[in-house]
Image (cartoon, rainbow, N blue to C red; front, side):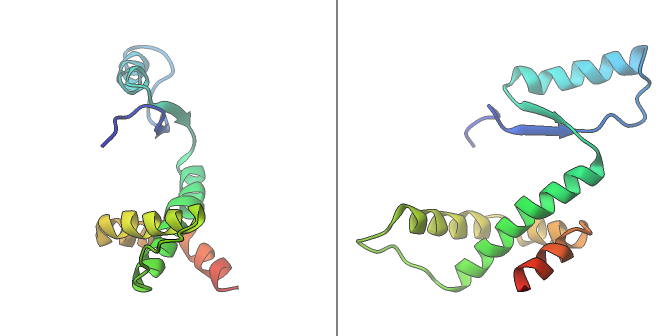
Length: 118
């Protein structure tokens, strides 16, 4: 919506030979996103899933819980409450399929639910 500037572009170079044509094509592809202002983050798939469960999944979970509370703006909203309203709005605007995928296809999501329950 607001462009790609400073958004993380997470990648993992798998099945890319270190030298030669594959490496050059991979670097060329990655440069497209770097030139658009993305913050390039190289990490393994396992690392990504661990971080995603701790950030994306928990954010969507809390946002969806908040949306069920039918929170409303008040004349005395604090900045924190405004953030909660925005979180609830943003997460329910995303598809349920996204949330489902964050849970079903990330083995770390269950641990986050256990942590939340504790």
